[in-house]
Length: 203
View 1 (tube, helix red, strand yellow):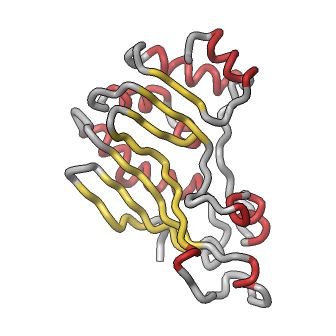
View 2 (cartoon, one colour; view 1 turned 90 degrees about the horizontal axis):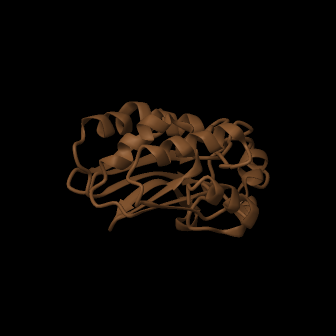
View 3 (cartoon, rainbow, N blue to C red; view 1 turned 30 degrees about the horizontal axis):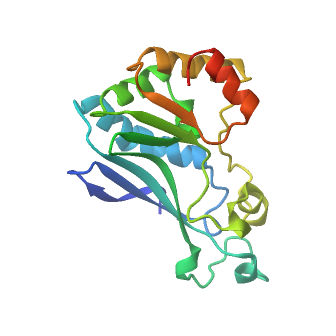
């Protein structure tokens, strides 16, 4: 089966929910490849063809085992799946005037991201954070478990870093091309990194 697979859409709420399969059974999964697949197959077209967006949700569901469930198994061998093996990555959510996105979304063109933001009805705030699988569980939230324990060396997530020139320029372009009254917040930056953005009048 090809992943990620669109499993649920709600046209009235613009929900896009995908099945990303199992991160142990699939071979060498790349989150960025999965995100790109959704982006190019459905999400970008939705953005380009929408006039006004009142609500939006984009998430990928994954299953993955704990260490004791795959002890003694060969790589990619099936294991007994339980409810607590079910997780998801929420890439973007817009509701009640607040847009929540992960840093990985900023990898796309600032022009397209600005265009998306400008179509969000009555948007007041943008919150940007790290891509952490939910619900958060200490044993598996660490990328090392996904990359090494589950043998997915291509698994990576983005980290927005304002000390990086390209990252700073991208967010400057987004800020420049949206309503200046929209509040932008980053929930993973330290005081010094936030100060850089304050100095640039981004936050």
